[in-house]
Image 1 (spheres, rainbow, N blue to C red):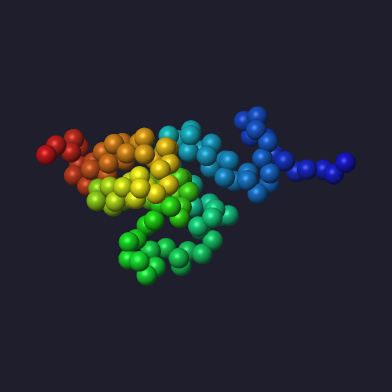
Image 2 (image 1 turned 90 degrees about the vertical axis):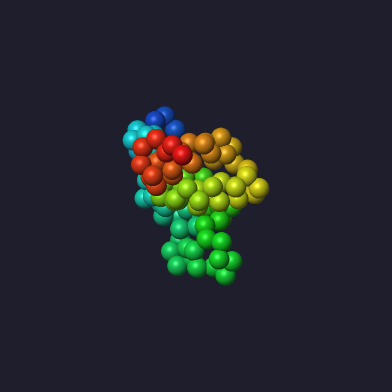
Amino acid sequence: MPEHKMETIDGIRYRPEDVERARARQRAAQAGALTVADAHLPGSKTTEDPGDQDDGDTGDGFDPAEHTVLQVIAHLAEADEDETARVLDSEATGEKRKGLLERRDEFLAEAKQRAGGPGGGR
């Protein structure tokens, strides 16, 4: 019988090529926050060529439909309030991923706090 080099993390078996992503998810869950480094792991579908970022002909910038949920969350962690709203609006009309849309208010509040300090009162 062939020997599979599966690795078990928290009782779940992973293929060797998926181990780093699983560990990143585990670190993010323990830390309570996702970092850009965790979202841009080697082998993810849009991080193979770093020259592709934001230099397309559309001029629209970050397109959430071309990224994983983790990558969108990492982008929103650094985006200003307008960019956060634009990305979430694009997600609402495109992919409609529940993990992003259910946290819309949270993402917008965090962006407002980064921009204007505590409270964010108008």
